[in-house]
Amino acid sequence: MGNLIKVLTRDIDNNTGNFFLDFENAQPTGPERKVWDEVNEVLVEAMEILEELQSYSGAGEAIRQAIQQPSEERVQERAWAAVVPLVGKLKKFYEFSLKLEGALHGLLSSLTSTRCSPTQHLEQEQALARQFAEILHFTLRFDELKMTNPAIQNDFSYYRRTLSRMRINNVSQAEEQNEVNNELANRMSLFYANATPMLKTLSDATTKFVSENAELPVENTTDCLSTMASVCKVMLETPEYRTRFASEDTVLFCLRVMVGVIILYDFVHPAGAFVKSSKIDMKGCIKVLKDQPPNSVEGLLNALRYTTKHLNDETTSKQIKTMLQAN
Image (cartoon, rainbow, N blue to C red; front, side, top):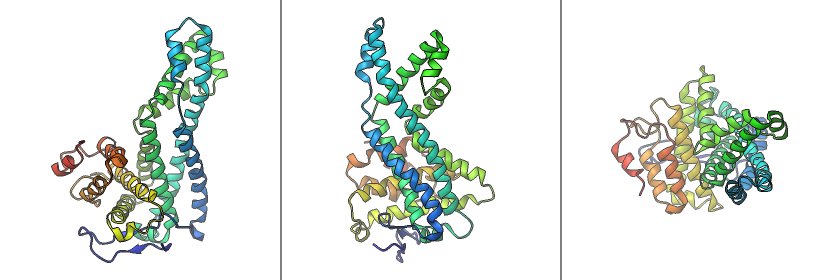
């Protein structure tokens, strides 16, 4: 695969301007290097975060013992000792979400500037487009792992209950000995209470980016997102392009990116992604998802069902709602 974006000259789904992006091999050019280096640091840590989350086993047994034997001091101490380092990991994940927001702002600043059109940005700054895709891929993977691991909420809930008791008995000891104090625990609680915390972080960050850059036409951002969705859809549904992926993992990568940009578009665009005038071919995107093995895309379909903003609006066609109904 060449490093340059290749424009498909044929009309697909009555939409001209569909693209093939080299998500596997795109490398930064000179003008991209500064932003690319900054974002790359965050992406390297993102892989470490996923590994830690994947191996997160929780302190379920120690907590059960502590609940069953509330008067046994040693049992309580064992549960606390088991939970504290795990909450340290949860703190790390939460703080990483703030770094992710900064990285996204840097990429959006480059990919939506008025220097050229969103399409030209994607053509000329493939390496940054690839990093944007990698952030979306990480986000949906993180949330999939979080949703299927109830130990995260259980551990954090036990920590907060115990911390509250400690503060009642000895405020200074509770605050001094634990890196996650009550104020930070409150912020983390809001983060983890969300079913898809990283996706909410990105949605909020994209909305914030648009509001903070009022001089930038909102279409610069939404067109960047809709073009990326189209890119992924075309690559996934066109055999001659899909076969050019060096790794089968790139298929799931593209699926996650497609769903991620749809959700961001739905939050940023005033009318959302599901309205008839949307620049995203929602029926085509849903069809691509449903054409995959069900066990690999159920989480992505659920993301569209439950984390978008406008799906249940009256302006959403019954056909789209029917296509997204859970089986």
